[in-house]
Amino acid sequence: MEKQVYEFKIDPEFRDLIPPLSEDEYSMLEDSIVRDGCDTPLTVWDGIIVDGHNRYEICQQHDIPFAYEERSFSDRDAAMFWMLEHQLARRNLQTYQRAEIILKYAPILRKSAAKRQATSTGGTDPQLRPNLAEAGSKPETRDQLAKMAGISHGTMDKVKQLDAKADEETKKKLRAGEVSIHRAYTDLVNREHDGETRVCESCHEEKPYSEFAFPSNCSQPRSVCKDCEAKAKHPVNDTDAAETRPVPHDTGIQVKNGKTAHVALGLPDDPAMFGQVVDLLKHAQNAYLAAFEATLAQYRPSMISEEHSDLIRELIDYVADTTEELLDKHLNNKNTH
Ligand SMILES: [Zn+2]
Image 1 (spheres, protein in one colour):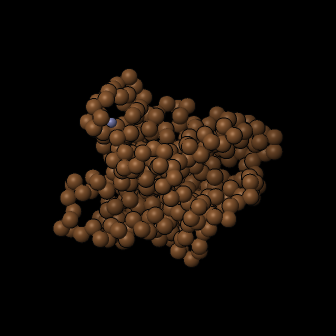
Image 2 (cartoon, protein in one colour):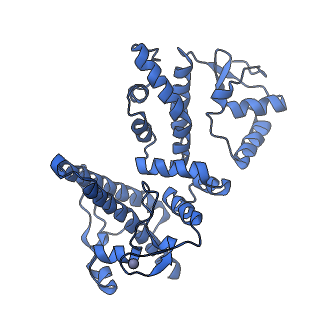
Image 3 (cartoon, helix red, strand yellow):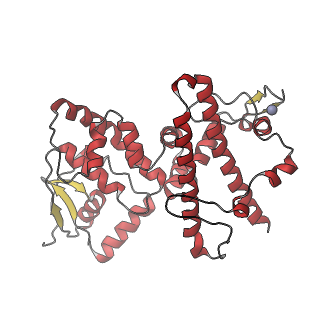
């Protein structure tokens, strides 16, 4: 296709679905296009840009010719589904970025899900993957979206809070993967209550707000401080705790899932081995989730009560908090050696 400075329409609703590039990213893209020209064709539907909004803007501004591909969609919804799929398929997206994309599309997907149900046959585009089509047609759109982004419910809720309240600097770090969602969320909540204190119901000491765990689905922190919580769950004194807690690399981890993972062997101290560490963590995560699901199957209707469910939630939070603590401890050890 001949490269030219084509004129296309920009649809504001489509344009606003694209996560904005940071200033750095934009100027890097601009520099490369000005230097080498525009190599990646834009994607256009019926004269409207569906992919390449930034490239279009840069090419127009500097009068740089570009190529484009024409795609056809049955309607606006189908075009937006394609855009969503296209964006989630981009490589190197951080969890927060995936969640941000999903957040932007959620209202549109919900709206079109309602429309699809009303028309029953709908105008499904053959390019849609079945799971995407499902995401638009089931009532649990929220669950489906979280699943598509590979993000848990709880994390999605935290992202919503961060999206609404965090400052731009924090969001930049989240997008770059420089800070975890859990950490940024905890910081946000603690900052909101900076200077406040609470009295622990167990030890009756007045402590800063940050000394109380804050479950994500709850607008109030726990009534018992973290220290007392830890003591209640691990009724051993602190010096014993380190010795009695089973340490993964002493015992090795056995995981089903087709493979057995042995941490006991120890990995060579080499940056390239980090992929193995990630694999091992994923196995551990799968094993935990499988065990959790199997256990939930035993949580039968006659046992189910709000109190029992709260207890389960506490156990889940305990896992999250403890793993975070283990990580911090490990990182601190590394710094002092
Ligand atoms: Zn206490």
